[in-house]
Length: 350
Image 1 (cartoon, rainbow, N blue to C red):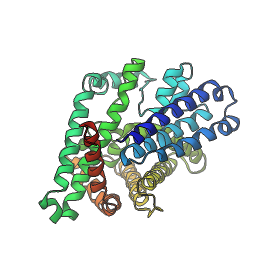
Image 2 (spheres, rainbow, N blue to C red):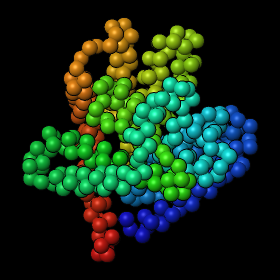
Image 3 (cartoon, rainbow, N blue to C red):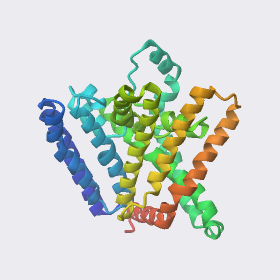
Image 4 (spheres, rainbow, N blue to C red):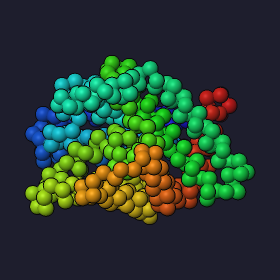
């Protein structure tokens, strides 16, 4: 990144810390619900503005994800005495970190939850010694994917190869950004946080993929912000199971709209709603899985077959609705140009 990007990064950092400190010291003393919401809205607005300080796509999208999406959702939950920030309101460093960073700490409340955490303790919480290797592996995959994008073979078969390479590029980039985001929590606060991906390539259903394996920090934010409120409100009107289906679709709809916001920050053009179609479609598919499981029971298929069917559904629908906007804007060329520019700066040739 150029000096202007570093200057923007410093401004965003200072603005974020100052804003969240204000929320912790002042806004937290305002009565919850509407009064606290009104006091928080200027901060929410600021976090939608800050990403525009960056000209780099990588920095801008990271800022959108960290602040405009996750942090704003957590602040809105805090207005109603809900969400993860309520657990950290007594400590300013914890409050700032758990508001601004894509991290979460799982707090089991029942003996069953505790047993599950103990069973998965090594996988979920032994990441402190594996963060740097994960980042190195992710960065290596990013560089290899970008290099492969410009080979003659890929250029001659763009429609076939680009979705596969974009899958590697996107998953590796997310894993690297989120892994790096956990480092301040460990160094600054001395806490262990959960990993944000749990081997998504082993998902046995779409519900398993979206709910328990892929980008879990978003899942943990959308549940209290959308899923549980919608399910609670609808259950009084239509019953428990229909309310669950409505809540699933509503959660995917909100996720779709936030992804469209990310796309707007990426291309600076009005949305074409392809990403909305992708996530809403998956919302209905996950709801359909819930219906099949409820009325027909668990389908006795081999695990390998269920994984293959799930990954095929993800890939086919992504090729149809998710990847075309990225291919149209030439994200591969833009990403490669930014990486090349960053390398020149790091090597002192800028």
